[in-house]
Structures are given as C-alpha cells and as structure tokens.
Image (cartoon, rainbow, N blue to C red; front, top):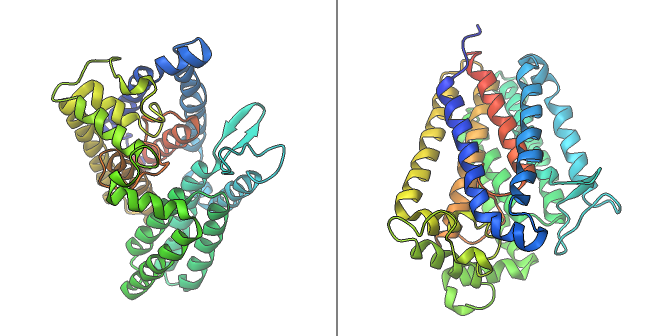
Length: 359
C-alpha cells in the first residue's frame, strides 16, 4: 500500500545536504583560491558530481519498482565489485599515495567502494530475507561473500572501509534473526582477524599507538590528531566565526574532507557542534522510525543497513577528530568533500524516501 513520502525525513535530508554545502564552502574556499584561483572550486565539484549525480541516481532508484530493485540487487552488487576491481587496472585506476581506491572515467574520478556500500546493503537485505523464510542456511555463504569483499578492500588497501562494511554486515546478520550463536561466532572471527591485519601494515599499529599516546610522535603521525583537537578547542563556546578558521590555512591536514568537522568546530564552537550533533541524531532517529514501521523484511533490513552505514561513519569521523577513536580516512556523511560518497548518500536517502511510502 502506497502512502505519502515521509516529509519530515525529506526536510531533514535536504537541510543536512544544504548545510553540508555551506560548511564545505567555508572550509574549502582558501584552498580553492590557493590551488585553483577559484574559492568556489571544491563547492562546484561537490555540487556537480555529488549533488547532481546523487539527484539523478536517486530519482532512478525512486521510480524503479521495489520488486525489480530487489531482483537485480545481486547484479548491482556484482557490478560494484567489478568497478572496485577496475581500481587496479592501469589506465583506469587513479592511485594516490600507493592506495588503489579511485578510478578515472571520462575525466571524473570516482571511489567505487562508496557505491559498493549501498549495493552490498541491498543485496545482503535480499539475501537475509530469504534466510528468515527458512530457504537455506546463509552462514557459510555469508562468510564467503564477506571474505571476497575483504580481499578486494585489503588489496587497495582500504582498512577503514572494510571495518565499516564488516560492521554493517554483522549488524544486519543479527537483525535478520539468525541464531545468536552464529552472530557471536562471526564477531569473534572478525575480532581474531583484526590483529593479524594490523601486523600486515605497520603504519596501522603506529596509528593505534599514537592514538593511545599522541605525544609519541607529535610532529609525525600524531600531528593530524593534535591539530584537530587544537582547532576544536580554539573554537570555544561560540566559535571564531564563519570563514575565520586559522587551522584550515595550512596547519590542519585535509581541512575540507576528513577533517572538516574540526574546522566546523573552530568556526562554530560548542554551540555549533551541539547543533550539528542534534541534527544528525534527529536524522538517524527518523530513519530508525521509518525502518521500524516497515512490514517488509527486505525494506526494513535495507533501511537499517543504511542507518548503520550513516551512523557508523559519523561516529568514526567525529570520534577520530576529538581523539576518542584512531584516525581513519572515513568522510563525515553529507559534509566532507567528496562527490563519490555524497552522490551515493543522496541516492540512499531517495531509497529511504521510496520505502517510506510503501509501508
């Protein structure tokens, strides 16, 4: 039965995207002027690929019948894995800092792991729905598919995205009412693999050690964390004012992407940070309510998967900026610069809107 779309969620979603554009403009105008002689350079790119790309992809998802979307979820997932594989192909791959996370098509750089997040959630929701209907056992196949994704992401390497996808998959596996013992076993396996994966890349061990004690390397790997905390702390209660961040002028690494929350904290202070956190909280609660009202298991699992994705990324990004979690390369949803992630996040919100009228 179709109903009206959830207008409260629509308002929160649109407001969050527009607010993100304003924060990005403030955080990036200095870098845009310095490197491209255009203070709006990064904002225009975000609007073009992230905003317009997300709108086009979102409308396509919105008009596609849900049963068709469910049927093709496996092929969408395979397609996104194919694009992740292209990140290793010379001529298409756009490696940066010895990491193969980007592809370049028709002059546009794109991170295929971002679309993998959404297609994996869709496919896993469809897969686990059939598990709840008692068709077949999914424990071993679940391990195999997560293992394949892990190999791709470790090869890039993209440990932060792997951690996020593992978290989403474990949470959805639990929500699908699978045996609790299997969920605990999966969690134990993920935890047991964590330490060997750390040893494979010494910089990850060093990152954790400096997270525990930033003074071990204050001018090296700890520099980013220290400057983030300086930026947020210097904002005080009301902040220095829009556009008046000093850390974004070359002191803080990645001021308009991974570290944009630190710049926002410096300019808007405790009051601004509180507003943004409350906005995210209301947004997440609304997604939770939409998911809880779903009678269809596939739609419910998909919505909760998107909720887990958005909330985990938000917690990880902000937690890293304030020193509660180790630094990662995970962007702040809807806020950080990056057309790839914004495009897919907007598309995911259109999917939630679509399901909100199909309760």
